[in-house]
Image 1 (cartoon, one colour):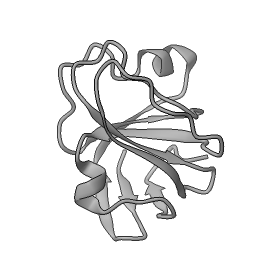
Image 2 (cartoon, rainbow, N blue to C red):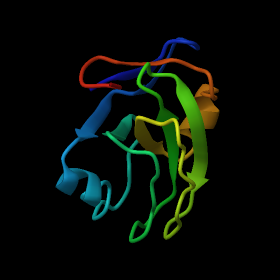
Image 3 (cartoon, helix red, strand yellow):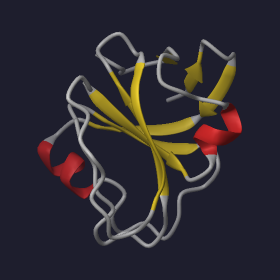
Image 4 (tube, rainbow, N blue to C red):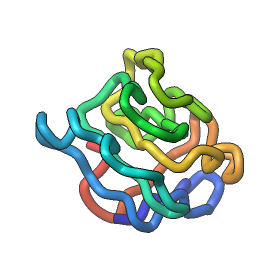
Length: 118
């Protein structure tokens, strides 16, 4: 699916997959060697993430049910626990550097072409 930051008019990812089941959320990006530009993972429901067992850093945007960014983690290194975001409905995991490159910040509204954020 495609994810666009409507506030800034920029595409965050055009090959974002969704993890909605317990097993797909548990697996997340584990077992992947890298995340390419334009790729990502929309995890729903989700209020917190970790990179335990991963080999690369990621950016994470936490969204509420309206698609508004309520928290971000930039460059979360491998083998770390990210802080939870109480108001989050889901988490969008992206290639490290994506949030800074697009200027994505809390308060921005993201739009999914299917399956998100609610």
